[in-house]
Image 1 (cartoon, rainbow, N blue to C red):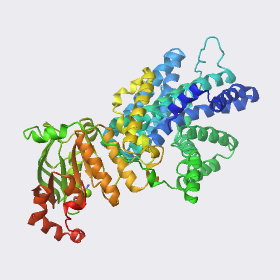
Image 2 (cartoon, rainbow, N blue to C red):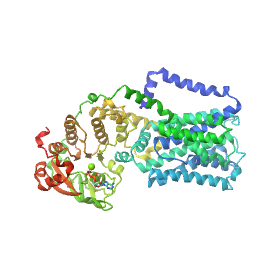
Image 3 (cartoon, rainbow, N blue to C red):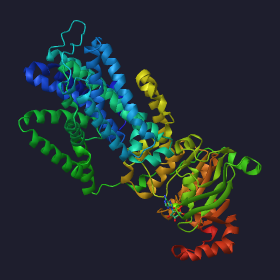
Image 4 (tube, rainbow, N blue to C red):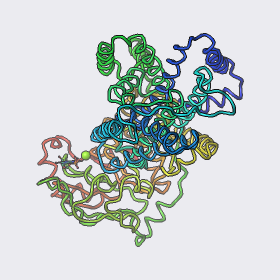
Length: 622
Ligand code: ADP
Ligand code: MG
């Protein structure tokens, strides 16, 4: 994964094979035109335009997971803008091109606006609508030349180089393409790309670790449109004539086919898909209907049998071979947890009874249609406390966490964090305010490595700071190195170094649980919400968990713990709150609660828990 650091190594250690490969690629790109006839170089030039479009699509669809059917429109906006400005308004080619790219980016932002409010699958329809609307406009608007299009677009001037020669134009395209690809790879392998991928894998969990989901979705569309804009300008300069049919739905689906077949999660895969399909389409130019059907069929087969496309095949083969050979993770390589340095903060605050509570839940109700999942729940957690929340299944414990961490908006009532009202605040804001959580059913980012999971949470960069990608990439680079060091430290603390590059899904349950806690701690929270962290753990793992939670508290973090494992609750928590049917039925020290008749009744009433008596606190050593 970490190609940035690897690139660093390449440069430092003069890693000849890699540099050699790069040199060979440059040499091939350089001499290619010498080997090709006039028509062939034209096809290559077109392929490069499609490759740029495909990278943009790959960023939105593969990396960010947002369905984008508007790429032809982004492409068309900049192509038409350049054409109209140069022919109608007498602008020079490059000033027109610059304005055209800005126009494309603005349209990308515009498409992204519904993303602030809408679920992603509806966005697919919005983007398709934009594409159709654009096609309509090009065929009907007078300024766009109607069905005839616009011709006599000037040759882009370039220091006396005659770009009307397709051979020379090729070099311009290759350089722009290479820069665009490097930029896209830089985005994917640094903070922004990681956050986009986290959003793709699990938007809820991404929000909980501070990713600004709606803004990130907009960013994905804008990125996509920028690549569309560059492609549009290059296309106009190459063909110097445009007509609506270039931007029609058939080409949109061809582009989609390129991205799906090549492999949407890999930008290089997108490029390979684009170049490959352009060449194949040229071969099949006499049989357009069969070609369309063929592409459609291949796309369907790909989606079913190789959803990660051609680029994903090697990874899948390797995973399959590993599984065959029974190569699994060695549970024993999980290293012991290294406790945090105690700050004494927890103890100090505990004694100061009048300190501002870390968490105040005030008469919170949450109704789902008729169901009162929470019914006027109030509870107060002091700073430095480990609070237990227990109750039969369905009593509203997870719902309470969802309200506190901003996933649900309370029907009534309020939540205060450290004295500050945070009712209805979005998850990413709460994360910035110091709330972190884990999930009852693990929500790790499945297609990211363990280390990347941690990095997403460590990186607190706000989305607006993406200007640095254009203006100050060195700053991004430096930050990556710092984050990488922090991630390594955190992985070492949680004994996870061995699994840094593993896919979370390939690891045993107990290790995944620990990764989730490490990820939550990566955001340096003040309040940590753990939702059944011991579920599925064996006895030894539960003992380790107790040690980890205690150390986290000693480092000054307030912990609220939902747990069915009564032994753990009894040994860890100073106070326990019992929920049943969405109401608080008891609260007190573990012993008080265990002796409370209401609690015993609530548990005995729940058949799932009936055979699970409250154990003696001494069962779990402290
Ligand atoms: P617990 O975590 O204590 O087992 P939950 O908080 O998950 O319980 O659920 C409490 C009740 O709220 C359950 O009856 C559950 O079905 C209901 N519930 C939780 N989330 C939703 C939702 N998003 N929509 C409808 N009902 C929900
Ligand atoms: Mg639950």
